[in-house]
Length: 237
Image (cartoon, rainbow, N blue to C red; front, side, top):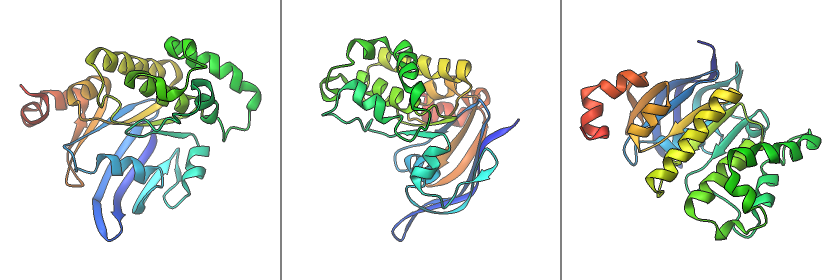
């Protein structure tokens, strides 16, 4: 397995409060890794730590290069796109203006128009809404827009924070299907934080379970689906 993202002994802090306690995990090249856990386990902080948004210690390597300590914008330029919890769309801009902002760090501006067509192919509803203000979209459409905007970066790694939050089950299935297609067809690695453990474990090939900022279980997603502790605590059967 060739690693795209390697995290070793990662700690993270908000002020003096330590949230992560030396966690380690890997996202394979072209793989999907899920991080599971209850509220407050440190899942969102893990993504923020990879993106350079919080104070950290430990080692974070992306494509063999250490990125811990780098500024968030420099990490984005390397090809890491972060889709935050709550979507983070610019509600007073149109769909297309939001998408063009996703490409703001790219140097190959000539290809941006082609990539607009590419993401509209994944999300036809956004093509229909391209001149509509993002704030008037439904919750599911806003989540699609957040994901599509991240794809405009042409990322090598997607960080997805709770993409199913607050959405109807059929919308969640559609979004997860699109993520799977992007992963398979474009080889984009995915680090997924998700409370819907059943969906996450069916999408991912590897998973880590966090409790109070520590990895307490790790392995192939298929194996964790069969683990009795995981089934009882997170899968409900």
